Length: 124
Image 1: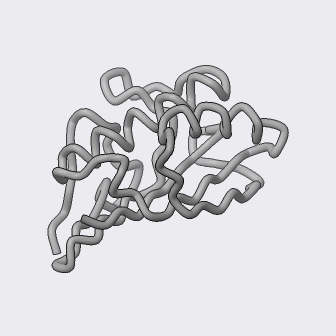
Image 2: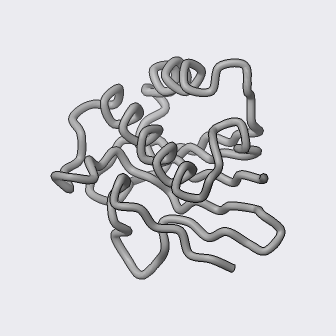
Image 3: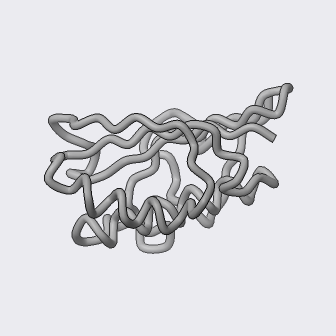
């Protein structure tokens, strides 16, 4: 196993890695929030947070020599299902014709009072 970390995505908020690459080339990304990696601040609003989450995911994928087409499963955690359509639209634009398996779950609260968090499993 190999730990994957990049300065192009926010540092982990706890004792965990941004991602782990297994010997069989499966990449497990920790959930990403809409945090700017330079300022360390949460973006404002669901649209900006979702775009930042996907940018952060992309940075971690690239650090591991993967890309979005390697993604096989995502899990989206939303603070409110009222944001479902906005997140869907941005998500669809990001992935295009590539449609990984996905679950979306409403949660009571996310770290830093985030509105959206996405975790990813990718396979090379």
